[in-house]
Each structure stands twice: as C-alpha cells, then as structure tokens.
Image (cartoon, rainbow, N blue to C red; front, side):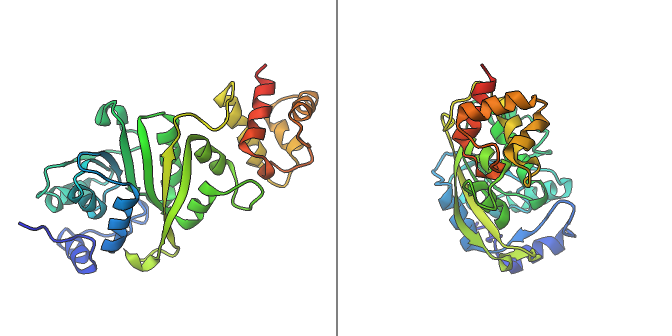
Length: 281
C-alpha cells in the first residue's frame, strides 16, 4: 500500500480536520505542505539507508515521512500528546520510525539515541530554536550533522561574520561547535498557516575539534556573553560585567593586542580565545 504524501495542502488539511487539530501559536505550529522542500531537506542531510536520525517536533509526520522513505532509522520526539496520536496513524505504514512523547529539552537524548553517531533533522518552532540547538551542541552528543529549518533571521545570525549587524553570541557559539551554512530559503507559502516571515534551512556540520583552543570553555562563553550584552558599549566597558577589575581587563586586552575601544561584535573567535586564555593563566 502506497501511503499518501503528507507534504501536500489537501492531505495536510484533511489530516488536521480528521483529528480536529487546531494550530497552536504557543507551540509555534506551522505545517509544511511543500514536497520539494521536504526532499531538499533530506538531500541537505545526505540521508543514506540505515542512517540514525533524531527528528525534533515531527508534527503530523510531514518531514518524518520523507526521512523514512529515504531509508533512515528515525527517532521522532514530539511534545504535543495529540500529535503523538496522529503520528501513530500517519506513520503506521513505516517500520523504521519510533515516536517518543516528550520535551526535547528534558528528554534523555543519550538514552534514546545511544552512543553511535547520528544526524539531527528538524523543522524547529521559531520560539524555541536557540535553546534547542545550543542544548544539543553543549551536551557534546555524538551528533555529526544538524539540518534544521529556522526563521531566516536566525539562520543569518548563525552564519554571520565579525563586524556585521547579525553577528552576536549565537554566531560565536554555533561557529565554535559547528561549520554552519545556509542551504536554501523557504517561503511562507510552503506552510499552513503561512508564517509572517521567511524560513531557512541551515546545515551545521559538527566539528571534531573547535576552531580555537581555550583553557576554559565556561570562561570563553562568559566573555562572549559579556561582550554582546550591551552592544553600544566599548569592549572594555562591556567586560566589566564579568566582575574583573579594570586593570585585569586592560592587561588582557593589551596582551591579546585588542583595542578596548572596539565593540564586541568586531571580535573574532580567535580574539575571544586570546582574552580567555590570558585570564586562564
């Protein structure tokens, strides 16, 4: 039996009506109805038969279907209990998928996925994109690749370079852990209901080693957070929020060859690392 393609406006609306689903703004639910986008996401993740994939927020199974049809072994984590019931029906024809009811920020991912490497593929709710991505990266899970659909503005921040308006703490963190690249833009018409903004699919290849060596990652990210906490302030003044005395700040900046009058958004990862390692002595 050939299962109908979920990434279709009529099929999606039929599923929503059949199960009495009302889109939740709280959960950021917009349902993908473009099969070409689904296939492009699967291709961006370079899914091969047998690949282990963690999908976050499968919804009614639109992207899930594309993944399982490509031969992936999918573990899909869904927070909405009603949608878990829907998934049991929409994915009943596939054996290579397992649905887990839970909040991805609380689920024991290691327990669900094991210790072998896997890929993360997701159409993330806009309101919780950053906590999910950073939570996955900070845990140092055996993830080799993240391919996620996010708000276009967030994707631009993730790949932004120093000195640009989009460059910030998220840029530094994502680029510390991964090599990110925007794969393609997804227009609002690809969803029901259509969101007010464009989306982007971003691929983050997880690094085996960070691009810079730091003595303390905790201190590194404290410095990054301080530098971007008040973007209008000079770096010297922004770093005062770390609690370090002014003389220590001057010494670190001098040793790193960094002008304290610069703004935090002009610093490269290497320069943040230089300050970190000076203070780690």
